Length: 637
Image 1 (cartoon, rainbow, N blue to C red):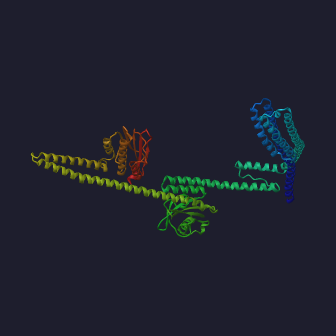
Image 2: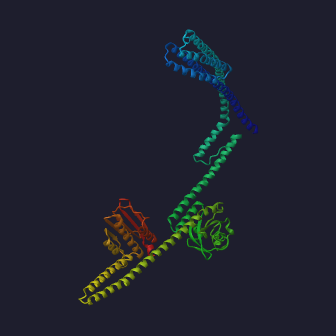
């Protein structure tokens, strides 16, 4: 096997090495040729720079000679300026030529051209022009002009020699490039042919030894991807292929196991979400615990689930049950917690516990369950606000014990159970506290109303009657005193009216005496906005409900008159499904918000304290609709 393995690897390495050698040789030739082409391109660019520089020198020298001759012939001073420009630029052009000359031949010719140019300007052109401008007739003779032509011809000859030298260098480089191009073609053709041959051989070998077995693996993988997790390959391959087949089978088994675990996890999360939804909705703990027991029974594939609350006297009460009807432990059953059983073990340790063999169980509960066929059980503690509240336990009558992670799966639910219990208790305590506060406030209102009506109001009325008697006893000759007493009596009468109105606002007597229907009619009569009443109540309602409904309507009418600019308000009250449904709607400007304004906030607090709901719909420009629902049963309690 080791020789086969080594042969497979060595052949692949050998083939790869041959391919790399062929490709590397071809690319080496190409890289060498490319480098030579870059060198030739640099030589060509340099030669072109030399040509341009030589051309600039020749052009400037020709311009200087031409402008000089034109001045001699015409005497026009304008040609002198052009001559000056040419003679001033000529030294810079020759200096540039000398700077770009790199080879010895180039430098020789460049220095020679620079020497001829300087001699032309310094030894000939400038002296002649100076003499001509002074009026010397010898400066304009034919011999002088021929001397200038001779010097220019010498400059051209030297420039042509430099050009020929550069051209020879360029031609030599071009010839070398042509040879290299031929070598490139041969290298590319040979590399392609060799590579194709090596690749064909490697492809044939890989197809026979590797590709065909892998195709079998791919077919099995396709079946695996389509959901057939039981797919397995026959492990008939050798060396790497054989190991691939074994690894495929291991992967398939792992996927199958992971799929089962993922399915269990997803089912657990879905169940947890359902339980969390119940907790968020604030349903009673009994419903939550019953739902948890049912979810656990289905998830951990057990026969029975019990949720037990620990009592202060050391006993336990079953608060939720699923399955296990033969266990004789229904909801409400109470048992002592002694001996060795899951419920008692969790109580003592505060940690998860399990019993895989119930023949070892003791105590009243352990004996009871063993007699009814229970063979194993697991349990997890439930903590509420940091204290041990109870236990969730699962039992089975099968010989096979519960799964190793059964306690952990139970523990995943205990936090939710504790949260549900704590939330429900807190909610119940809050509602009870708010109800007591609202009841105390209403009682205080009624006491104040009675004190105002029976005390202050009666005293003011008695005082007014006494003043009237005194007023009648005043002599007729004291009219001013009679008028003053009359004014005092009128003031007392107004004060009595104010006290009566104040007592009515604190707690309307008509509400206590006649109920919600006449109280709402009284509100409608006093309203500054037209009110349409539709009150469908056949009997008196619990007092807290009537008081809350009264103040909802009173606050709504006040808001409609002061803020909404409404012209009409409709008030509808009826009883539906053991609830008082109160709807107040106006045609005002809308835009009211439940969180703004102490009036609406106070109404919401009062309604929620009675376990009711308040819904506000007030789009801008669309009026305001306030709907209140108050439970009658809870309020009556």
